[in-house]
Length: 382
Length: 238
Image (cartoon, rainbow over all chains, first blue to last red; front, side, top):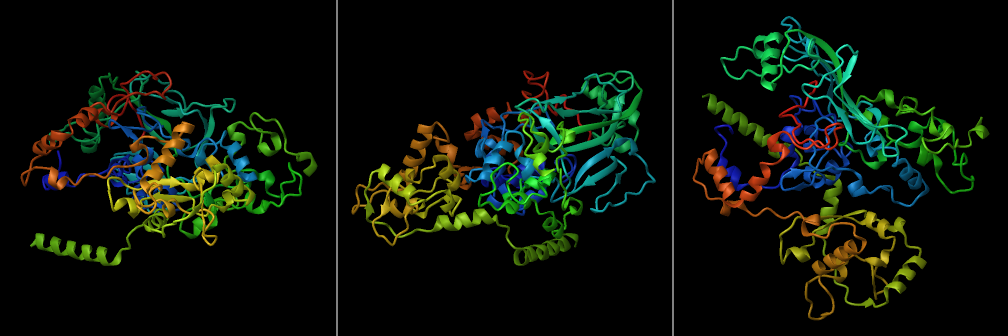
């Protein structure tokens, strides 16, 4: 029910289209606060800087211009939750060949678009306007004596109700192959509780699958409870239902009672024995696309091009091409630093997406791409 | 007393907000809005050449994508708005369309007769009022937009061809439509909305935003399920 002092007549008389503010009143606050859960969505998007998000900050896009609706079903494919009522992709507007100015560079970039998700280059850091929570250790909750300390972003490292946190701002995503499909663990799913860590969600993809692309993710880590006998995750009862509530963790700080009540609520047995487990979730980064001038350039990933001054590694060296401008300019981390962002360590970084971790032998310029096995004139340069 | 303090504190905050704070603007959108407001002088005479001539002459002149100075427009001309105002502005990515058609003459189909005019002019230079008695052959701006966009979208089987594919409809002023007593309660308000929007209400009841569950077509092993979601099975670690 709405708050008592809301003038509902006034609200009804002023009904209008949805807006970033209306969608954001829930979606910006996921996880219990601004920018906690989504690395790429926060109240910053109400009035975003152009560099923070070119669609919303430059062109004033509302959510539903991309997340189109039909019969109140809203398109979008989440990595964090299973429900999808239609999908939204960059390609729906920008096509499979999104770089269209007809230059030689665009030809190369469009080839990259077959292997890279747009946001690999176009949103090279996440939480770029506001720190986002990346670690949440529930096992540390309930310590009355522990005083929260503020980290370098001014964010608290502890909350008695919730446990221990880590926050990150302008952080480099974790890059993984993704086909758009996700593996997920649901409430009641059996898991290997002896594994070191458990992925609650993870992308399905492979370097060998032409349909998979390198995709940026925020990694949300944490420690949470599993049932030590039933081998499934435990759901605690947190919010007190009312004044008489005798089990809520945020009232009594008793995990046993909270697990018993929580599992009753979802209709599963609680054995009475729990243990803490490290878990991870992959959160795909889709928003806060930067202007094209701020996208990654060739050398920020391809270290081998760093010394090159022309395109002569592959092309005849008689073109009127400003190689340095094309290949070296890119995301201006020095500028971002000057704007107060925590990116000093990214200035002059190369191998940005870590080719070896993605399954390449190394820089594809030298070792060949995933389907083209053509080394790019490397010997000549040795 | 406390109420008074809150009232004055609120007043101070409001005044500061009104005087001090700059209004946020999206720069690219603002620029496009300004451009959309302009009405340029009507071009009376044009060179009536066939499209193939026009295409060849533009190509011979070496006009290409590089000459596109304005990448993005809002179509929101006062010429149309003074007659009817039912829709919000239409976003039009000029450069993208130039690239897709790769043929400027598709839209810039004639050039003004006056040599001093630009080779390519905006649509609204030649197409203005829906009927001009001095130029009865000339279609108006609204017709020109629709003919140009929809015919090409249909031909190429690409791009929207229905109203809502391009236009967001203005929301009608509900001040006259809504009939409610002062201090209406939540049930009265809901009933009043449903008086007109019962279909939408039925739709809403079947959505994930209402049910907190729904189809999971991209979750392996559960692609045909319709019961997963935060209201039922979804797990997280925050």
